[in-house]
Structure formats: structure tokens, C-alpha cells
Length: 270
Ligand code: PLP
Image 1 (cartoon, rainbow, N blue to C red):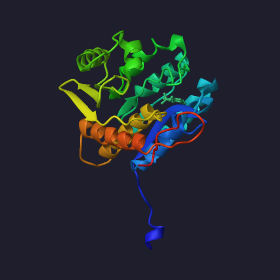
Image 2: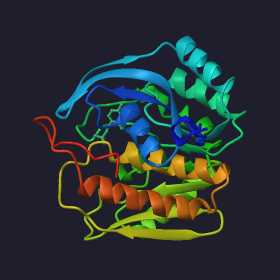
Image 3: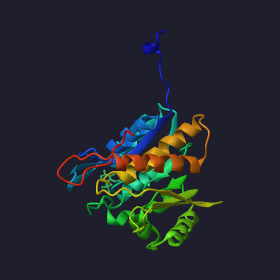
């Protein structure tokens, strides 16, 4: 068989998330990132947003029966190495995904997407409570400081608050929490990884740009890809997956795309 005929086997990853028609965040960011990080990305679409670099104009939640059908199609055919959730839009969808998560047998990264940087809501207000059940099945939860405040009631101002909030999330049953510090006014960006055994701060450079659209989706997708590669044979643990992914995100922001009339978007193929 010639080199061009040789089949390639990559670990299969899955994103359960919403579409960003502008291509910078959501399922589009997830699939580009999963490919850039060496996995074969599959997707379950939960919502369709009409969105560009300037904001979200409208949002349509995919009916849960159709989300269930997508999940069944993927799960019955692929050997999935790692899964992430992003925008889930409604309480019914969070419940459905939590129900499926009971029988996932690979790492699950939960990015609790609630409000876009533009200020637009991406999760119904009555869906907060439903997250409890999903968090209980997560390998890792990746909230930013706004999401941490909504999930735990702690508004983090420093690393100590982030650690306390992370411990609260662990009390709700997840194995680990990565609290991202990009929104805090520090010189460097410090993300705090809290696990049952350790608290570890990952520090990286703050890039002076407003083009951070898609940063959260890109980070959680990169972690999913690295965890998927580990469950498929690569060496490493959660901490190495997180460190590789924050380095990936730093490059994604440094080499951001200056697209659209709004602030632009991160670059997912770095
Ligand atoms: N749109 C969708 C579909 C998303 O999933 C997300 C974030 O997770 C966003 C928009 C918001 O992206 P950002 O807050 O990075 O602008």
C-alpha cells in the first residue's frame, strides 16, 4: 500500500454543543480544535445560533428527540475516546445529556457555557439546577469566573477564591475543576486546576487583544482531544492535558483571526 492509501486511525472525540454561524466559537471551534490537536472530531448539535463577531442575533434549540438521535447514532458506531459538552441551551437538553453521561465510559469535559462574552445568554435561566447531575458525571468542569459565580455563588477575585470554588464543584461529584482566570485583572493569566489530590496553578502570558471569541470552547476542546489521545495510548495525565491545552490556547489567542467587524476570533489551528 502506498503512503497515500494508508488508512489513518485517530482517537475519536465528541463535542455536544451549539453552532456559532460566525465560526469562532461553538461546534465550529470545537471541531477545528479537535482536528488541530490530533483527533477525529464528531458532533452532536444542540442549538443553532445566528451569530457573528458582533453578537448573537437569535438562537434555536434543537428538539431533544433529535439530540438523542444524534447521540445514539454516534455512540452506536464509534469507539469514543473523550467527550465534551458546550452550549446545551435548555434544561431538557442538560437532563438528556446527563442521562447519557451515566453510561459514558471515557473522560467527560463539561464546559458550562452560560453567557457569551458579547453578553448574550446561551443557557436558559431555569437550566442552572439541571447542571448538578451533569457535573456529577464529569471528569473535568471548566468554568470561567462568571460561570464559577453562577455555579457556586463565589465571585473569585484571586487564586484562593478559585481554589475554594473548585472545591465546591468537587463536592458536587466531578473529579476535577479547571477555573480559568482570563477575566481576572492579573498580569499573567492564572488558571487553577483543582483535583481530589492537588491544586495546581497553570500560568501563561496574557495577550493584549480583544479577539478572544471562542477561547473557552477552544480550551475545553483541546483538553478533550489530549485526554482522548491519552485514553488511546498517549502518555500523560489530566495535568499534562491541561498544560498542553492552555499552551495551545495561548497560541490561538496570540495568532487570532482579525475577521468580521467585531473583535475577531481565536485561531484554532495552531
Ligand atoms: N456561541 C456558542 C455556540 C458557544 O458555544 C459559545 C461559547 O461557548 C459562544 C458563542 C461564546 O463564545 P465567547 O464567549 O468566547 O465569545
